[in-house]
Length: 293
Image 1 (cartoon, helix red, strand yellow):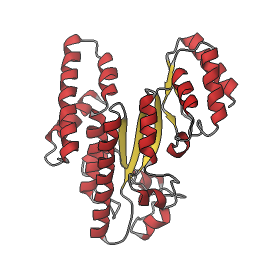
Image 2 (cartoon, one colour):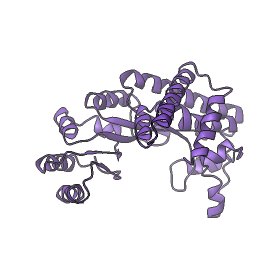
Image 3 (cartoon, helix red, strand yellow):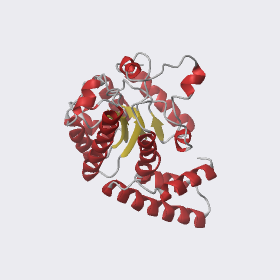
């Protein structure tokens, strides 16, 4: 879609429905820098004062954007970028053919922070390194620890970002699919069988069992705890927008207090790598189920 058409559509939505934000689901949005510039200039020319984000971008490409382009995107309302950081280890990035430099993530974080843009970092862990269970378990633990170390370092640059982490799932056609089969992955033959591989957090939490031979159930549970609870509680924006939806003032205050306590506990667990006896996580899961979240 051309830059002119994008601006026209957003202006129409703005004038017709009085929107104040746009979520952009376009993995190729930043591929054409001129198109990005044209969209931003078009929004400013049209007098649009809205926030937009959730747009997917690749770090190697965005760190090459010049300062005037970053300033233009900020003035045009860009507030959030989703990026697949995938791993903190260069070896993993090379293995999955990411075509990225692990060190670029720090420059990217500094750029976004200086322009008040939030980043949604998406990591994965659980690479099928070998048939040796002990070796693979050790490597997966190293993957997770390297991500946690990088998260600590990135938080020193900015506290406004959100981190996500998922277990690696073999998908047909991907670079490592054959590697996964070679190291013990039993290829599903039906959609029902695939549903047992693509775990939901609830399945993992309820002792679903681990069909992937190279990652232990304990590691799978840790990844889920990090994604659902540790990283989730450290997203301060979540506290604000959830609280806005609670009309009762007493309940709203209780929620904010509970969130603040959870935030402190999550930060402590991350800082000291204390993931045993996750009583606070159990309470969090029960609470989520109770409110249907």
